[in-house]
Image: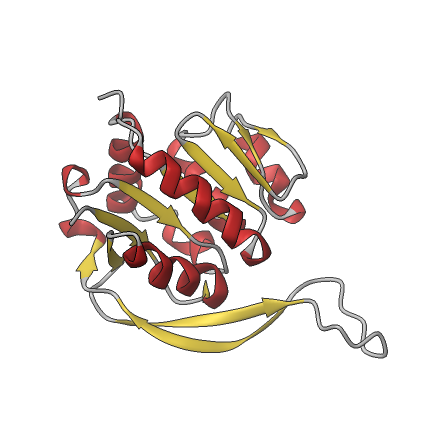
Length: 190
């Protein structure tokens, strides 16, 4: 069974993550969850509260479910994976500084394997220089992160550019996963 890498950390967005975590095995892929350490991580729920009596300009963060990482970033070998799914939430803001995560993401990219990314996950791709010259989307508040990584940001629900599929957030999970699965079935250029 082909493996898909799913990097997480504390503050990973629950809906971004769990949709792919359960959807990919339905098509025969094993999801390998990795973090800075192999341990239990806290996911979060992000949304702008729908109550107009209590306006918020930013997303509110609430505790979500927990998810076990079975691998640490230091133990990852890009050759073991058919692709990578990077979810959003607050975690990418912190884990993008992990040299081992950046190494494996860069190697997966260089090997021509598909990458799917939602929301703040773009911060990881920007840090690895994988999006330079690519057209991407993300939540509008991360457009600057995409542009600083050399990408062209477009405000669309999802974008496919070569072996890369990006989405704004969990609302776009269905289309992002459809495109990611399509890319996983196509041969790589490596």
